Image (cartoon, rainbow, N blue to C red; front, top):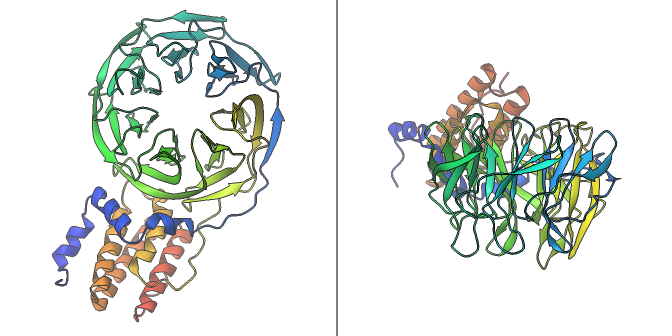
Length: 483
């Protein structure tokens, strides 16, 4: 191949984020490299038994009420789907009965509304999938029936938008297929209206609200895609390919505003992989592998910004006690203290003190009522460790770019990625002098990011040492360390 020209280098700097992501995946399994950045470490997290629920439940839906109490809705008990609800009183640390629903439900959704009531939609009743919806008013101890949705839904997703109500999409009725149609609940008029059609039918998906006010539907299809709903236009758009096809995964909006999704079921097996959605670039990037495959598990933010993944249940594989923490600063998963009881298909909710409560679920074939409290570690996230030299190919620098990406505005780190990818092309073609030239341009961009406050000293030092290691390995002389 001919050497790349200067114009080609400039084009690489302007490479679309989607192409950058594809190239990342093609130059040596970046997801695997990310796991090596951080090392697993012990922490002082702990689990404590909490009072058991009044009724054993698997697949319960939970919501934290405005006063901090936790409402648990429906799920499967020993005799099948249940219409019962119960409330955990955080002051008395005890469970009490909540209002009984009109329908038994599992595979339903619950959404907290502005007035403190809770919207419940769809689910399986034990005799079929329902299109019914109702409002739970805990303060008045009552449930109120609503007009039916346009579709009977189970395994769907719901999210409250910033201004325009509750968006419900996907799911199935197990007889007519999987739905791509969405609908909107208006809390003022207590009515349902169409909310567009997704490009892909989805079931056992998840949905998150982005800082932009748009909602993202994640997975639940065979192709492994996501797409955005824009409340301003009432349309779905911006389809983005994920790195894996997932159902029954867990997702959470991180402290940086990115969306982390992990685990789930793909090709009939539980997955350990995770990925992160960059809403500015509109792409998914690898976020490393968990230490165990997980499905039907929970992911929750803890106060220091890390994400706790806990438990798992997979038919034929039982349940897990194991838990682990994801740190975006290193893009790694590290084990944390295991739960007291193995559980999956459970609920999770944040307590007013920032601790987490794991609720019910399945321990193998047994549906359980137990709950336990997670006390997060007092030690904060580990900073990005300095790279142990030598790194000898430009692509070896990529994990360190992704590690500092959360510090940068928008998708500005793509320029760094593009330079490294161009340098990798030169390296593979044996054009070492041109490769070193691009790496020096990479150095100058790191320096500019540090001076502009877009990368802290520790992050820029990590990037510099990786750059210097590659340059030295290629027989060049690194530019002076960034002051």
